[in-house]
Length: 358
Image 1 (cartoon, rainbow, N blue to C red):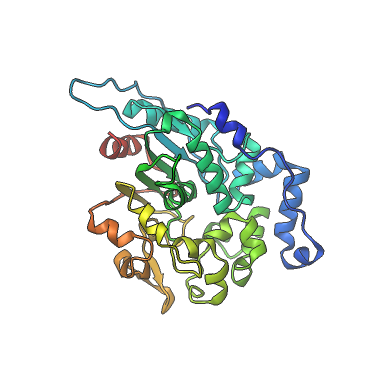
Image 2 (tube, helix red, strand yellow):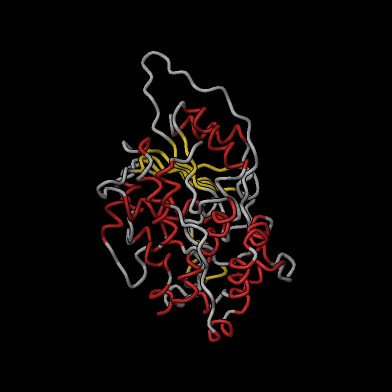
């Protein structure tokens, strides 16, 4: 894995995060306290994020021998990797996963961060909103000459939002290479309706979870929270998906074309990717409902009781952003592993890469 000088130069530098007004502090004091910490003690906050109950930090992997092409075999496309919440491209786990993936398929591989250091990259996974993070990620893709002719990509946890956002915003745009195959591992694709790991026994654990819990419900859907907090951007309360605030303010609602900003170009760009792979962790307790990793969702008519099949959802039946069109073209693939959030084995990852990236 490497970062090009052009990519690093475009990353958000160590500038100050938002300072809350008195009105904002009264509304979300915990979030404002986290913002203060980002400015005053960023290393401490990065470590807290990395160790929070909802973090998704990749474990280290062994690097296999690099693939040698046999006669008649074609070279694989380069690989782009995106990390989960609390993690960073600068951490040893993500470095090893990225390098192992490239060695397995015999291609260039890179993890694209959204900050210029471990601390900034980690904090931006929390305090750089989803749309802004996608824009930074896209510039990293655009300015890496190794990716100019297209790439395959996989993400871990909320890193998949960066790749999916890139696909729907930048696929086919001049100067931005096309994502060919996208593999989402424990992706926050259908959003989350809760953060169960924050209160496994009814008691909120730790300062990061206190901040997350503070914005659950109506407070998630206002311009201030949506402009700051990545996790609020994909919080999808199944009882509020028909509310005016959700449709107006939720970034995820716009991505799914179920909000006020309906844009047909999202469907067109989604169709440009050749293949999708949706990987579910069968014991995942970080994403609720975990089946959302494969596009299932709670029924708005029974939001905390009935789980719809993926082809029963509004997204699919109305093809709001292209999910059904991709299905008709046989682009969807479904995989799973027995385990907790992103706790797949190396053999499982190498098997998926061989099946879909080679």
